Image (cartoon, rainbow, N blue to C red; front, top):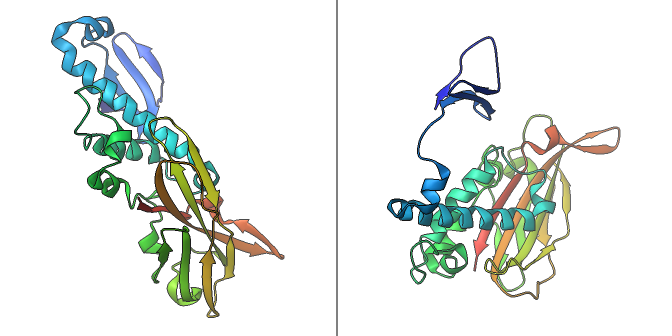
Length: 248
């Protein structure tokens, strides 16, 4: 695959070349390779079929997670979050040591300590990671899903983007069964603070979900700009932070 450098930007197929646009610009690739039918039927490609099956299942697991947290994710993601999450889910799938080749899955991999560790800490917006935004003690009660940030002075502990006047903290407690797709997301209250030197104890309290599955805990920080008494999302949420803080 090659990048297209030309004043004329085209999309489509010309002879044996396919032109298309990606997030990284216009690219071109040559048609060819093994036919789809041969990959699906030829015994020589059994490993390829197994790899494709597992990759598709990993991508589906990533999609299930993204869909489960849409209320959080809508304004706190980067353009490549789908591919990045699929990559991590593939690593989680590799921790499945019980399923046969071609059937390894995230639902089994996530039950292991290594599987949980791989997903823990995932940043949904690499343009604005949690460590780059806040320097403060963040505490989590795993039984209740309550996050606390004590003695917070936003002017000292928050690194806001230019133009921000306010910051909002929120969290969520998700129960997710990757085998069945069943899920329950409980959102916390929101704490909105002016960016100043006032000291505040931030407490985010979600309802404890009753569904079964893996426990996932999310923390979100969003920035706003106040104009004439109204707070507007800053740059459509480009600098908002969303991190998966713990997986149990």
